[in-house]
Length: 215
Image (cartoon, rainbow, N blue to C red):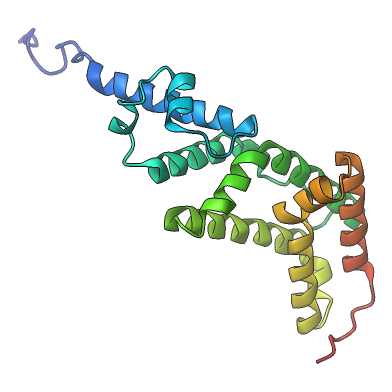
């Protein structure tokens, strides 16, 4: 019986990893993580030197891994989205009691928005100047709006179309990052009080009589 040749593809050892590529990936990740760390410390516009010092990559070498500062910012925002993906899901279904759904959504949004505070602020500052960041923001906002529409579908379906559209828009704004930061920063509410205010607003929206909006 013939035996397999020792130099056949199946018997050859795997080729060694490309050391330069692995080093490039490690350095790129170190730069992104350094930038995220600076953002989280409140430095929303760090210098190249600050990023280099934090990452351990020389300032001169920094943009061997990124096209420019916009590319680096976009990479950091994308990494943050991956890091908080587990906070995006809403662990509730439309058939649960309204109060339970509201409680779950408010808790989820509070945890998500606290986790992404710095990077979400940066993304909103850069969106007017970076199309890729603006597109990501639009995509994220659309996703969060669909979550609200799905979670409160029973209440919305029981309303006249114009009323449902208005209530959905109001609920979307009420549960947005911008509204949460307004409560936390401008009104200086604790997380608990911000959550209570959001809960009160959502409860009112989905239990108030469904009257047609005036023109």
